Every structure is written in structure tokens, then in C-alpha cells.
Image (cartoon, one colour):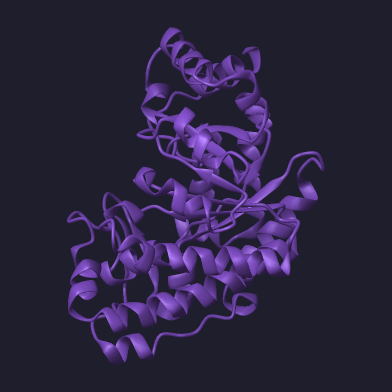
Length: 325
């Protein structure tokens, strides 16, 4: 989860050279450099493309900026039906060519034995940011207002985003991505009866389209706060489910058995502790699985993104603890 980031001094140096976060994302050579940095430092089993889930709305003409201390912000907002109808239907091969170039460059420079994971945000999660004008301190109340006032317009946006995401991920696969991950970071905001309508059906459509076009490419779906819906997520045809730290790993393994792998789910805050506790938490997590469950269809991961305050040495301890186990 978020392998490259502000916890790494080498990343901070490269970001300073780029000038800004978006400039870093849009420079294929520098994006390749920061993708490879954690692989070189920690020898992870897979690399994940360095980019951001908000590249698609940026390419749709919403003009993304990252404001220091506030996070993502769009300079153009969607506030009514006309704004929505007039958003650009993105051609990723043109508007997001820099991501394709980065994937291609990473794949050329990455050890052939290490798979490269491409990714995108889910339609619902992107809609949260788009209708909220960027990040949110009020649980994206704007998108939920649309849901209950103008659901037909929200569905129009979700359909547009679904098409863009399929095209975008197809491009990443063509450029060399070996696996794909979908991040529904805000799926947990939806009510139990709305999750299938406003998130799950679109995740299913994306997974189905990618499987049809590229049957050999694994897809992993991560819904933060989605522990209640693991059975539903397992039914959409994805190869794996990412789980956050609130989910019982053994229960998740039972749900995924025979359907899909499970990826997760150490609390990222564990990495802010000392070495003794990191090793203890790793053992506790893995001891909960049988040998068969460990060997078949399980990928160790954090339950969400690594914190910028994580000491790099602690990640080394974590990797060492897993390999020793």
C-alpha cells in the first residue's frame, strides 16, 4: 500500500526535484524512479505504479492541484447538470499518455521476476472527490447530497467514470502492468442497501471488462470499510480482495476460499511502534491462519496506506519478520 511516499528520504529528494506532486506524477522518468526506490530498498515481491487515483478527473478537465496542508483540490467544479454533461470523456491514450509512458518505463527497468501492479480509483470514490471539489473534511457530504437529490445525475457521472477507468486500466495493461488493483477508498461511506447500487455494480463491470479483454491479468478490489460486503465483492469475479485492518483475516479467507485470494491487512499504525511490537503483530496476524491458508491465495499487505511518519527502518523490520516467519 503506497510503497513510495514521504516516509522515504529518497522519495522526498526526487519530489523536490520535480517541484510538485502532480509534476512528479506527470514525469514518466521520475515516476519510474520513485516506483523503483522502495523495491531497491526493501526487495518487495511486487511493485506498484507511482501515480494517483485522481489522474482521471484531472484529465476530464477538472484541473487537479495538491494544496500543501489541504490535499487534493479541483480548480473546476461540477455543481449542476450542465457541468456534468460537459465533462470530457477522456481518451487515456492522449490525456493520460504520461501514465502509459511511466508503466512502460517501469516495466523495462524492473526485474523481470517482479510483477508490476497498475491501479485506478473506483467510480464511486472518484465521484466523491469530483463532487466534493477535492478532499473532504465532512465525509463527502456533497456526493451523498446528490445521491438523495439527483441520483440520476450521480449515475450518469458513475457511468462516465466507469468507461474512463476501463480504458485507462486497459492502457496500463497494454503498456506492461501485470496485475490491476481497484481502490474504492470511500465505499464504506455508503449504506448497506446503496453499496450494491452505487459502487459494487460498477466494480463488477470494470472487472468483467478487464477479464474479457485480458483473461490472464489478475484484478484485486479493495473497499475500505467494506468488511460487511466481502461475500458480495468475492462474487464479482475479481482475483483478489484487499481488506482493511478492521476485518478478521481468517473470516475473510473463508469467504474467499475457492473464489479469490485475500490481501491484507496489518494496521499501518503498527509501523509507528517499536521492533518488538512490529514482530509480535506480524506473528499474531499470520498465526491466525492455518498453513494451508497461508500458502494458498494469501498476500501480506497493510490494511491501508503507509503513514508518512513511518520510520523506514520499521518497514525493513516488517519485511524481515514476514520472511523469517
